[in-house]
Structure formats: C-alpha cells, structure tokens
Amino acid sequence: MVEQRQNNVGFPQGTILKRHRAPLPAPNDDRFYTFDHFNVGAEVSFYGRVYKLIDCDPFTRNFLTKLGVRVPPGINQKILNTFFLKTKFILRFFGTRRSIS
Image (cartoon, rainbow, N blue to C red; front, side):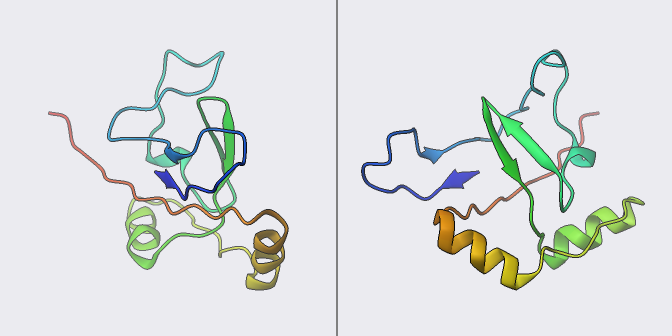
C-alpha cells in the first residue's frame, strides 16, 4: 500500500504497508487483518492511520463475491471528486492472498 508523496505536509508518506501480516489495532493487536476486513465502505487502521475503502477493482469484487462476501457498490463518483478536491489524498491498494498450508 503506497501513498503518493507530497512536499511539506508534515507527516510520513510513501510505503505504508509492505507484504506482511498487518496487525489489527489495539486491543486486538494479537490478531491480523484478513480478506474479510477489506470491503467497500469499511475503515481499516494501519499503524495509527485510518483509511476508508471507497471502491475495488473488478477482480477484487469477483474474488470476494466468489467467497460469499457481499460487496456494496463503490462510493458515488461525485462524492469521491468532492473528497479529492478537499483533501488531495487518494490511495491505491493492491492485495494478494497467500495460502498457508
């Protein structure tokens, strides 16, 4: 998970998550995020920063649907544009699933 760097914003930017198991926020920090934590409209917290998931690509939507997860439609484009104009922060998230046997 990578956040685009901007000059002089006053907080860490760049790579937020690498390929590792990310712990859930306290008090559940002994457990880790799984695919069922990531759905459109959900909020996830990584190392003290909260992110709202606003949409997913067709592959992810199909993957979650096949697992029996109901994936809501993405947030309205007009709302997204308003959000972007106010904050200038949009992240792109890529996830992979690895089977541990």
